[in-house]
Structure formats: C-alpha cells, structure tokens
Length: 426
Ligand SMILES: NC(=O)C1=CN([C@@H]2O[C@H](COP(=O)(O)OP(=O)(O)OC[C@H]3O[C@@H](n4cnc5c(N)ncnc54)[C@H](O)[C@@H]3O)[C@@H](O)[C@H]2O)C=CC1
Ligand SMILES: O=C(O)CCC(=O)C(=O)O
Image (cartoon, rainbow, N blue to C red; front, side, top):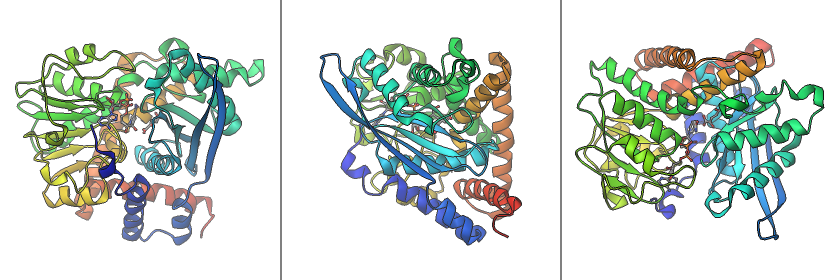
C-alpha cells in the first residue's frame, strides 16, 4: 500500500509535461505544434446526481479530457478512483495521445473517470452512477469522436452499461451500428475475444522481446508486480507460463512475498472480482510494503497507479528491467535514479499499449460487422507490438537514448508529420 503523502510530490501532469518538453527540445519540434500538444483540446467536468440504495441522492463529479485528435478520434479509458481529478485526467489523456501515435493507430488521446471509491457502492448503485455519467457526457463521446475503454476499477460490465445508455440516447435506426462507442465490452455485447488479456499480454511480450535482444528468456527470472488487477494478473499469467517466477505482489491492501514463487492462478482465484484483494492469500507471507521495491529480482512491473517509483524508493530497486504496465508509474526523479543505475525502463506508452491495440481491433470488428476469434486477435496484437518494439529499438540505437526518449521521439514525430502534411504550419 502506498503512502499518498510521498506520491503527491510531483504530479503525473508534471511528469508527462517534463517528458514532452524534453522530447520537443531533442527533435526541435515546430513551436506551433509544441503549443498545441502542450495543452489539452477539451476538458469536460460534469456533476450529476444519483439516487442511492437508501433513497438519498449523492452528487458525483466525472471528468473527460480530450487531449489531441490530430491522428483520429479521441481514445482512452475511464477510471473510477479517489485520485481522479482534472490534473490526473489531463496527464493520462496526454499519455494516450503519445501511446496511440507510437502504436501506429488512427486515434488521438483522451482519459477520464469519476472521483469515487467503487468499493463503497453496491453493483446497482455503480450501474446507476455509470448510466448517469454517460448521460451527463452526452455527445462528448461517440464512436467516431471519443471512445472510452476500461481502466482502474472499471471493466467489461461498466463498458456494457455505457454502450447501452449511449445507444438509448440515439435514434433507433442508428443503434445497431454504434456499439463501438466504447471498447472492452463483454464478448456477448460486441466485445473482442482477447481484449481482457491484451494489456497484460503486451507487457509480457515487451519484456520477452527485450530479453531476446540480450539472448535471455524468462527461465530463472524472478519478477515482482504492483497491482493484481487486469494488467497485473494477465502479465503475471503470461510470464509465469513462459517460465518466470512471481516472487512478490503488492495491491492496495497488502504486500505478499514467497521466494519459491507465488502461484499466479491460485492468487487470481483468491481475489474475488471487482472488490477482490490479494490480502489473506495462504501461498505467500505478508511483508512490510516499504520492503516491496527493494526485493531481489530481475524484473519489476508496476501495474497499479501513477507516481509509484520516485526518489523515495527508486534507489532500492535491484532489477535490471522495470516494465511499466501502469500509466506514469515512474516520476522524473525516480526515472533519473533508475537510469543512473543502468536499469532499462520499458516505457508505459509502449509497454501497456496492447490494451489500446486490442481496443482498436474491437472497434474495427464492430465497425465492419465482423466477429474475430481469439487466436487471430492475439496474433494481430503480437505482430503490431513486435513491429513497434523493433522501431523503438532502432531509435534507441540510432540516437543512443533510453527507451522512453526513443518512444516519445517516434510518437511526437508522427503527430508533427500529420500536422505538417495537412499544411497547417508550413
Ligand atoms: N486495463 C487496461 O486495459 C489498461 C490499464 N492500464 C493501466 O494499468 C494500471 C492498472 O490498471 P488495471 O489493471 O486495469 O486496473 P484494475 O482496477 O484492474 O487493478 C488495479 C490494481 O492496482 C491495485 N492498486 C490500487 N491502488 C493501489 C495502491 N495504492 N498500491 C498498490 N496497489 C494498488 C489494486 O488493488 C488492483 O490490484 C493503471 O495504471 C491503468 O491506467 C494501461 C493500459 C490499459
Ligand atoms: O483501450 C483503450 O482504449 C485505452 C486503454 C487505456 O486507458 C490505456 O491504454 O491507458
């Protein structure tokens, strides 16, 4: 569990702006484009009332920030968490713009959510909250305009409620072909086979590809994971299946350690859906959360919230690789320390891009009226991530820079090219 006083030192917004500005300097980004990308296009804040199970009305605050749509419709998740505010949504929306650009997708970037701890609400309250949020967002979302997806504490069920509510607001003749207003839906409601595991699979694959460049694989490799939700679980599943040993897991409630290995599937079974936690799992010992980052291992996977690896703990990390499953888990000071120690950071905008790549395939599937099988989806995701890995690796070598810098250069250059080709800033 994290000490929030420490994580608030540098905001995620400051982190993403540092990353953007240092890249803009390196590539000598057109100053007009720099101005545009340095701000967000639209920041939507909605307050909406919902009747609770006890009959009382509570008013909630929801956010949707649309950063940039030079490459296509806005795309990015919705998060239900206490830490959601306008600055967090702005930072996360910017990361989406870089991520979709780097991945080679026809999308821009957006992010949003509700400031709420979903554990305090019943399922039927969450359904009403989600539906009222969707009404409040109104035409700010749409299948060709802004397409939400799952993020922290939201899931396929949340997306199904949004799609159903959105479709009830449009004309009946439009309903049958607007399912792609959100991605990450349940399979029976237009979802894509494999979207559930797509992000974790991408995290696994990005590490595997990096290990291959070093003539290594997962055998005899020990890894630790912060966050055992969608991303943390699926990343652990694929790495364990490929020979890696999960020795520690931390979530919002506990930190667990077993030097002989934690059974990923047994731990997943222990966590009941949505409100689940790793706490109380019998196959590992609970440790002090402060000891988590310093454990002796080869790979560290932050897969929870932003600003987790900072100047307060980066110096403790002994692993050779930090693979960013989460968005913005490493702040600027933390990154400096890791790089000085010679640790390779696989940056979030590449490492967790399997999710939005899967979402793109779901969007195409819905748009084209097709149904894709799991095997072909996973092959397509693997192909795209592998191609992107090689592009970043070439940039790392060509410019002799770290992986985040290389990824940012590619992402921002693609957007700059789009603006230039449109002839806006000759
Ligand atoms: N779900 C997706 O497809 C994608 C998610 N991501 C990012 O991955 C990260 C995790 O997302 P999901 O797995 O979808 O969320 P989730 O809601 O399924 O799981 C979140 C996990 O983080 C843990 N957590 C929350 N607060 C914590 C704290 N203070 N300390 C330690 N652990 C804490 C929770 O206990 C839970 O295990 C987020 O940063 C998200 O933006 C990135 C790309 C796509
Ligand atoms: O699948 C998507 O559209 C976006 C998922 C997301 O929020 C992310 O990649 O951070």
